[in-house]
Length: 130
Image (tube, rainbow, N blue to C red):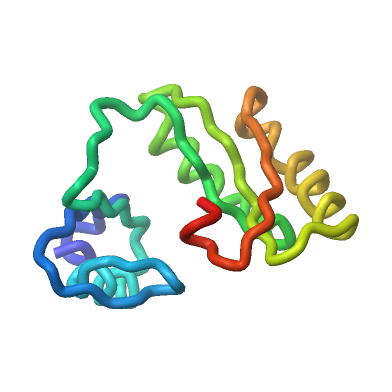
């Protein structure tokens, strides 16, 4: 359906008890299967989601590899909500190299989100860090 309809965004919820691992993040297996196959941007809302509105967004980034097309698409999707966005770069151990990478990413990202926040977080476990 996504391809036939040439969808710009796919939104899924999760349900059920069966869990799988996707890049260290636990998601239900149907969501994992879709994320592994689909090329369309996809939002996944967990069964336990409690958000009433989208006012604050944490955007996990790889500061060494900023994709401006992806960033622009996210800006377009989130534009309606006008959220406060914080870009988070998670590394196993902080060092000066990571600080410079985040500063470089900040220069690339501020034109898209002039009031965005930026955080460099140390943590071996991405899920726990975010």
